[in-house]
Length: 349
Image 1: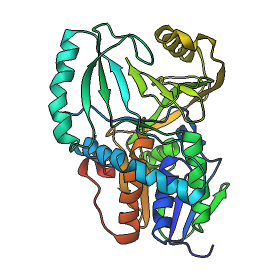
Image 2: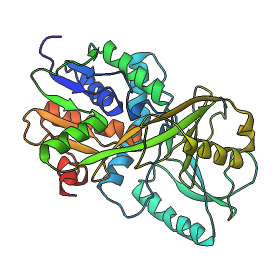
Image 3: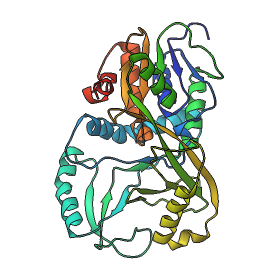
């Protein structure tokens, strides 16, 4: 492809999604991935598209809400263009409530969710039945929300690659320079390090996560979130368990006893998982911007360069809005990035 309208560096979820949003609009797109598709944190297993608590509303929560609400149509278009499944489904989430105070707090958020989520999803407190696919709840009550979705990371990435190629985009694997024209850098931890080196301060770093996949077909049921532990049933008949959040490590891609502990907690909550074979163990570094929100916008001091990074733990859920917002900026010159999600927000921290 000669003289693309846009070059995207990085074959993770942000890079693939930005490239797809641009290609859908008729742009000539080149995507370059130095290693392999999903080589960084986007090669993980969990794929939980989960909202933040519906209170203390801010730029990040509003942006995330819009992304989660548009996800079904957005990922449906990817599946249609590629002919491949993405594993997307909006099946909700269950969370146990520890005590009466937690129940009261959760009940207090019901009205806020109805207003802030625009009546398009619910946050409800429901009584635990003690049977079936439910987390143990000390209080006897659960939060059930209908906004949370799931996506299979590997399936989604391959569907995006196929959709890009079907749209005439070029996908290159290897250490290739971007060339002239607009460039979106969506290179995860390496990109945060490069930007930090240029501006002379830490604008983000990597946080290690570990997860595993079990051979257990739970069916189309809500995902579980309990005390930092995710259990996400996937469309391919697997169950993802994750994830750790580690600031210190010896091996960024090695799994260890911390993952075993997550597995043990999952089995304790759901004894039926005891006999489920472990299919995959995964570990990797997730890019966390200093602002704790995705970092979007122009690369400081580099005309024609842009940043789409910092999807730490919420990258798959934020991808549709990140993609469309970056396409607006790069292709049309329309900057609708909320203040809390700009590159400047991380430079100020």
